[in-house]
Length: 75
Image (cartoon, rainbow, N blue to C red; front, side, top):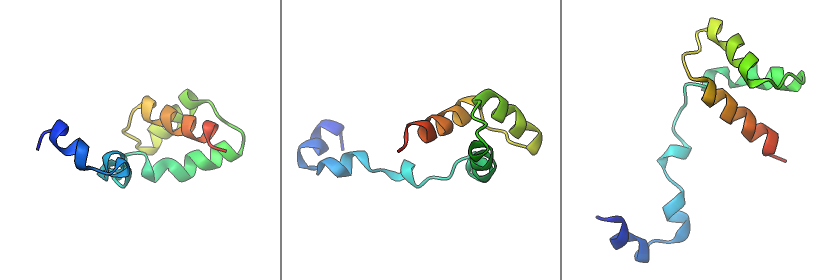
């Protein structure tokens, strides 16, 4: 169905909660390492990305940066 057909009948929360929220990420295996470094007050995204590359991280710098941005903005 087209978006304009579904929208009037959908609940607002149905439109924004999707499968992408539970999808696994390339970064998932490296989050404990990033969290540990974050707790050591090391918050430079570029340096943390460089540290993860030798650990076989194949994801992008942008993904690391976005993860750290979430940590910075969360209460």
